[in-house]
Length: 294
Length: 268
Image 1 (cartoon, rainbow over the protein chains, first blue to last red):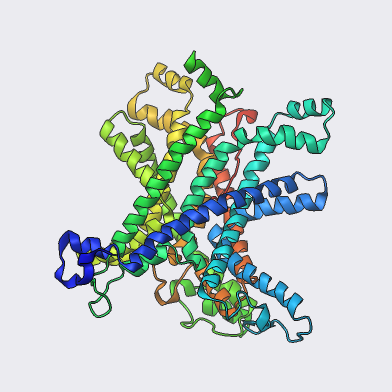
Image 2: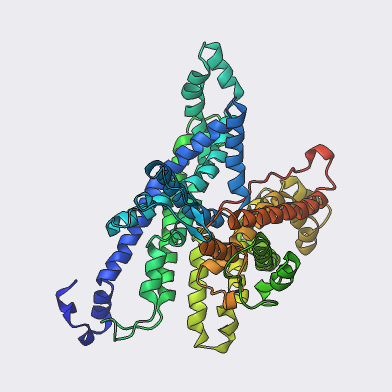
């Protein structure tokens, strides 16, 4: 990166370190932090949407839909989520390929599961064998986002389901008295009010989501954990210009610090948001704020 | 091979007793049930010992965090923040590589670069931090009247702690602590997926489930088996903690007793 980096062997001390930390692979490492933030930015709203639909399904008046919602909420909570991460990535991949297979090769008559293999016709493969590298990476990332959204959607559904039930019944009754139908009462009265009740749970979920991002590594995405292992392992002078011993410990220390800082910042922002949202609410928190001001 | 033979060969495979080679092809349901079940031994081992050791440390940390001594308070606060604020996954990775580096310093650390000791230490510290936060919250919500009554009886110091503060703290914290215990058992599945190698393929339940899923490319059998085992384990934990909960609440009138409200499993 810097002009004096052309001959690493001649360098020492800080200048060596500045060159070492700006190699192409380290740049990929720094970009991986961007991947993590991108994952969070996409997953959080998606999971919230999944959660919203899950909660609506669990409240539905149509019994089978209600069961689906309830099962969705409860099953994810009884099982280690890492198992879900490992499960969904293969299961979703196979489900997509199977669907494409049904559509694109209707006259295929061999079984799809042949012993230990999962065989679909060539043009149903996802992504196609001829696709460029970035398509493969994007597809992997997409699967990861979907998996995160499904798992965290269940947690969010649980929280939103609770929040919807916490909104005082009288509010809905008032809406009915004004002649609103079920749908109107839901969208105009229930949804705007439920967020105050949902926020503590959702902010907790956000913290958990941050702390779940390293599991991306298990889903086969080249994330920060992958790069920390790659870059930290001992390097001999034969293969690199910057030989060093086993530094993985320090790389993971850096990741630890990154996460600590990230959670600390989130904590501060969420505290502010909570203070803002409780202002004027008829809750204990709102009452405390009123008394403090008076 | 009949199912009984399989159980004899692989029932204790996770701790290194029995058949050396894992099955390589033509996996039967019996093999999957047996091996994943034998892997559960590790999950139970990690969870059980980390929970017991963590309990005592957590009480100490909670008292430290509530202490008037600034140094003690700051130490406890930082410890809790570090372990609650970062992913357990990264903690285990870091600890593993730290132990590997320390191996060259002293041979004391040899054992810690193996999962049975190293991962146990991390899980112990982690659960201590999470439980300490729960106990701290409970400590702050002990009714003022209880402490005043203890003072009126002339209790102070150790006696008051042992007879009043501690039992009340436990009683208030117990439902959340049950969740934490369930958390911890679920978190034990991370051990062999981060750093710590499964020596001679002696892994935990998820390790074997993943092995089968990789070999058969069919996730629809091993993972539901794993899920079944974990749901069973969760039910056992709820049962055991429920008994303790009843005992902690036995002096209260029926309707005032604290019901267990379970919100298990958010990852750490």
